[in-house]
Image (cartoon, rainbow, N blue to C red; front, side):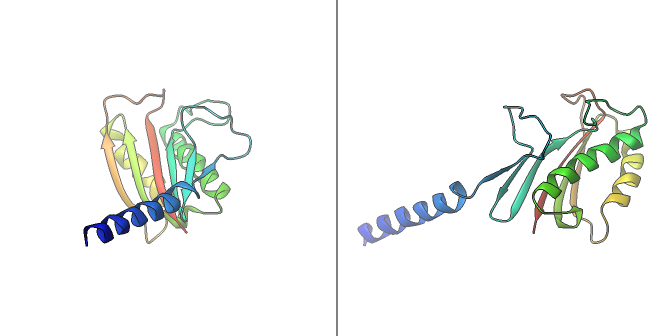
Length: 144
């Protein structure tokens, strides 16, 4: 009996390794430079995990207007989604990081225009400081 359980556990482990190790695909939109520290997106078994995206445009500039910064952050996510053959409608979960809680209503207005009903689940966190120079970072998980 003990040998049968050991064999079953080994088989389960091998299957899990095949499921999670062999079909992991890096999603890097055309024209983006490899960072070396992270991947813009990872697609595995039909689920896309998008790295945090700030409001920088292709030239690294952040808009002065916060609403435009939020829109650019969401557009940056959209580029990764598109590269994976997905759209905002495929997003199931969103995490928003703001460096100022007073900006929440403005972020929410732009967000509502981007994500239509039924909207994804969401967590919004106010942090003391973001790593980049912007005021917002957003990450999403999408599933086809």
